[in-house]
Length: 220
Ligand SMILES: [Zn+2]
Image (tube, rainbow, N blue to C red; front, side):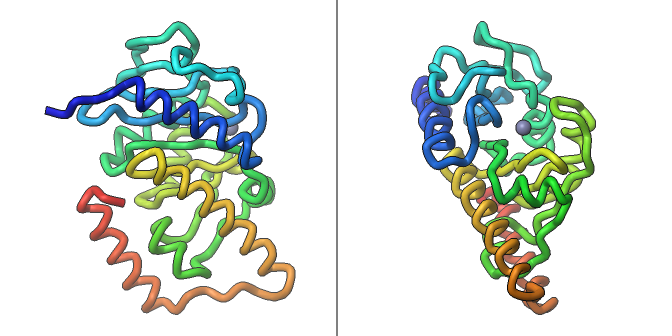
C-alpha cells in the first residue's frame, strides 16, 4: 500500500508555482499545475484565477479522473479538461505544468513546431515538439488537440497560447518545462543565423526507440 502525504504534495505544487513566477516562466495566475496522487485515480490541481505568488495549499483542489471535485472550495483551473485527458491516456505522466513561457509563446504565436535538431530533444522530450491545433482556452477541443499533438512525448506547444510540460513527477515536469523553453530559445536563435539542421534519420529512429523503451517501463 502506498502511503500518500497530501500536504507534502500540495506544498510542492505551491513551491513550483512560486518558482514559475520567480524564474519569469509565467505571470500572475496564468498557467496551472497538477499532480496525480500516487496509486489513486485522483489529481491535485491549482485553482482558477488565484495568483501563484499568494496561492495557499488549502486553495488547491482534489478532483477524480471523471472531473468530480473531491476536496476544495475553490473552482479548479479552467484547463482541467486538458490535465484530465492527459492523465487518462498517459499512465506514465504523473505531473503536468501548463505555462505561458516567452520563447514557447513565440512559437505558439507563429504556430511553429521544432524539428528534431538537438540530441537532448529526443532523449528528454521524446522527439520533435509539435504545435497543437488551435482551440479556445479551457475547452474539450483544446484538450483533445493537445493530446493528439503530444502523442507519447513530454511536451507540446498550444497554438496562440503557451506550452504543456509533463513528467513522471513534479520535479521532472518542471525540468521538462525549463528544457522545452530553452530548446525554443535555441531554435529561434539558430533561425537567426542560418537554417537549423535535423539530426540524421537513423539517429532519430534509434533515440526514439530508446525513449519508448524507457517510457514503457513507466519511467520517463
Ligand atoms: Zn494558458
